[in-house]
Length: 340
Ligand SMILES: [Zn+2]
Ligand SMILES: [Zn+2]
Image (cartoon, rainbow, N blue to C red; front, side, top):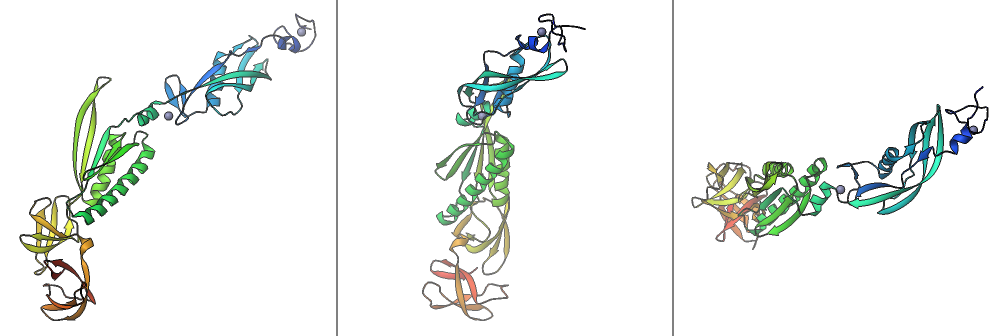
């Protein structure tokens, strides 16, 4: 029979010692304290040189495990850390060290000091520090104030929505700030990739033109660092507007990225011209068109009530306009009405 070398007890031994004698030794010697660094903005935890989404308890448990000294009889050790609010400063925590000794698990309570330090992680410090990689410059088209205000507000809402959606997948896709400037709005973004995706969405939904430029702002790890500017120019003409082209009234039927289609108001003749060719004059954005009640219709003319004074006026009937209902859409130019 083996017996404990210290007290002589004849019972199950752990090495050369009985359990009581073993527990009188320093089986487990935790460090004076462990430190955990937490991002004050997003609660991520610093592990080595990387910020990870782990809990401060888990990180404290791992550090304790590494820094605790154990008796040779201890073959395994696990720390149980209670939940605590990771506020800056020292926390005295009632922890359990679960030690494996001779095939058994012994749970031993310890008071452990956990010091929480607060820093800002790399992503958060960039966000706070006015960091940005790209500027989207949204600019109104030349529509007259009513149409372009509405277009600008719609594009603004579209951009903000797209940024918040795309920003969920890309941590650098944050909006650092926005600025109202003459003619539009500037958006400062953390990611050029997100800026490009946002811009593409607006171009496709609004028929806007896009110009991209970049400037060198420095070097990082031997690579050139650029800051990008993307100009979104909202179109000056939209489908439904009435314009003057070659001194004649036309309705804009459609606007693409390069070409737009016009319809002569009286003859119905279609013309395709280049977007931005410059010889168009906006007469009425579609918001300014009026609706007139039809009084009577003949082959070449339509009589309507002028919506401003309810006087009957006779208008030329556009060629190709077959069905005329109870009202027609009209545009006013030099106090004269034309059917659109
Ligand atoms: Zn003993
Ligand atoms: Zn953070």
